[in-house]
Length: 496
Image 1: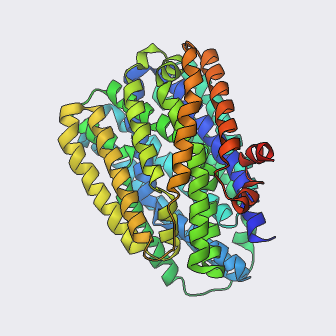
Image 2: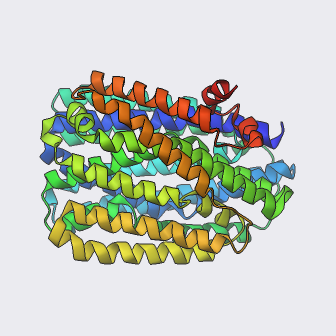
């Protein structure tokens, strides 16, 4: 199957996987927030932050190894080497996860005292076990992404997520609280990992061909360092600093919701590109060189902007009915925080956030990425320390948002030295204008419920699509590539 066809098929399945996953995680957060209440949900947010922290400790950059080198070995027809790479990485991940998670389990009580929350000691023990199984399952997910074979990953991931949401609702309704929710996560993580191992068994049992893995591991460690520095830009550090400065657990819960909503609503339509695009760019680099990558960068950025800009504009304007209707009036303080966060994230995306990082990673500029992420991380922590004591949750959002804007600016400036790219400024201007025009007729409605919000969204999307039909912002060749990728199929039919 040609690269374009495999990429389109992979992106299509990845849309189903990622959108389904984000939707189910969002539903889980709503259930948890409603049934736990602001204070307990804030405490759960602190505990859940350690899932991300522990997962980071266990990654070692192995996910990046599979994402980059699996497609290259496939293209070279080196199945034996591919099997060797998968087995070797999985073995190291298993041994490292066993040791590290055991230590985390043993020292959970001391850690809970260190963060000033001794009541979380038992929860952190459960988290250590959850992360052990998740670390194995996540690695196998990236094997399928590297193969651009997303269908089995999607079936397993969505099925176990559905079970997770269903059992979480029942457990929380029965009053088992945070501990019950964590045990549900543990059960579904074990099930998913076993299913991934069963599906990937041919790579573990087939004949392998040994080769030098040092360059691959060197790349992975560099990217691991980059991820560690990127972690400083994530919500886990913000939550820990908010906790350190004695922000109430309710406010931490508000921050967590604002962050998660921004991620879900800001990038939900573009997550199908994640992972698959790294594998695609790896093959483009080998076959078409810098010029081909420049063209691909432009099309990917345009596609992301077409989806993210209008979605962000609608969500930011109608944030109040969206949040209070879904989460209840108890979470009204989330509204302003969410609006600020999602607009700052949009600014970073407009500059090329995500797209530039992917290209620089593929062309071997990992050290520069390490530098830019490190600089952005230092800025984030410095601003957190200055702003959180003064502005609380808003200080954390301003700090992280500022860093997320500085980072893609530096990446774009550096990328232009190696890849001939042209920033689609005219395209962006058209999308912003059309989004603004589409928002105007919705102002005639009184949006105060999910029903009226849905009606407003239908009107908004309809006007926006007509605007796209008139403006036709994509080049004819770009429209042909987008024709088979959801949700661009609908737009292509309209253009015709």
